[in-house]
Image (cartoon, rainbow, N blue to C red; front, side, top):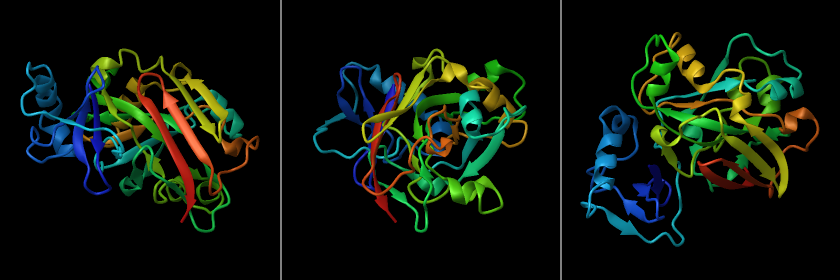
Length: 287
């Protein structure tokens, strides 16, 4: 299934995109609900899957897609957990050693915006950077998972993420990485959540990012240092992962931090995609 949220900011409605590209409103089916942590915790995916398999589709209204804004694919998550330096080539271009264990940091949940919304360069920023990443959404509570099989079974679905970062704030201003990651609009998510049953191998996905039409990143999730299953298993040893939580799994080489590309400025356009998960496009503005 491809699940998305459509409508103006703050008034998005849950929807599904069918295999024949019809957009179906799920608002009535979910009794006015949304793709919130509650939705994932209460078996919402199963309810939607059952409704979409019906003939005729019960209570699902088709929406006119023309001019309809696509919001973030999940409503505000409980937490966003990120993995840094998770591709060898990115660690190398960053001048960092390949980590022996996953590098973990958090990102504020109010950074989430839609896949085509404006991304804002923060005030005083000179080093705002891009990062195309595979993100996943947790579908069931994870505590001290014992195997990769358990970890993968807990994933509700996958989506495209742009882990926008301010490198001076992150690396040169002291303290932890979070303040270079949590500026407003720094987490475009979507265009849709693809359920885990339609992504048979999350370690076989190409991911790419362009700035102003120039290809900057061109990698594959097969080159992760720590794969999706290990990331989820590992994190569950240190924190309880809850339904609706988002995990960013790292970015391949090609970011501006490498010194090979200029940092983002007002008017730049980022485009990014992951095989089978859709495409994003953001214009850069100024806060």
